[in-house]
Length: 224
Image (tube, rainbow, N blue to C red; front, side, top):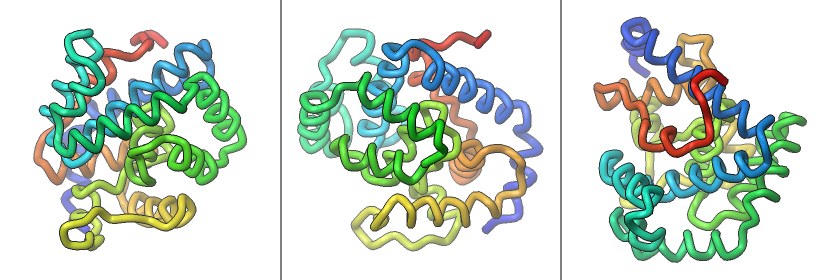
């Protein structure tokens, strides 16, 4: 792992405090806001996570924004991204089978008990198209910064080998969370795991991503 991540954190200290504040605001609504607001966050974080699979950030964020602006359907948004045919089927199946308010209540129950691996298993088992990595990304973007996404940037940083031509996979949420603990505990910062992962993502790409396209669509306010 690179020692330069410490310098990156120092150079972008204000940026990551802003990230943490945004995550805290989102977390407050997810766990303590109205159940409809929490459901809205989970629905949108699921869409954002699925659209991001194997797709450049600018491309999937454009599709996400266009959908929630009412310009394109969920199907059309999926087809704007890589593996769009698969994604439209995953999204259709998930929206046909998911009561987002029920999921929000489950998220709150597991978060209250700090059953993070059980929560991740719940997401992976009930939402089509998100395995452990993207399921964790979905929850982390929703404000549960105990999670992190072992994406290709983190895998490169941590020297985790991905199978050629295939995605890195995990057999269980417990195994996945253990790998996350190992990777993120090595990062010299007191910030939560997802903020560390966000910084690694930025560090590996050489720029700070703000994900404004996602957070602009959420029922959160700066003063929360």
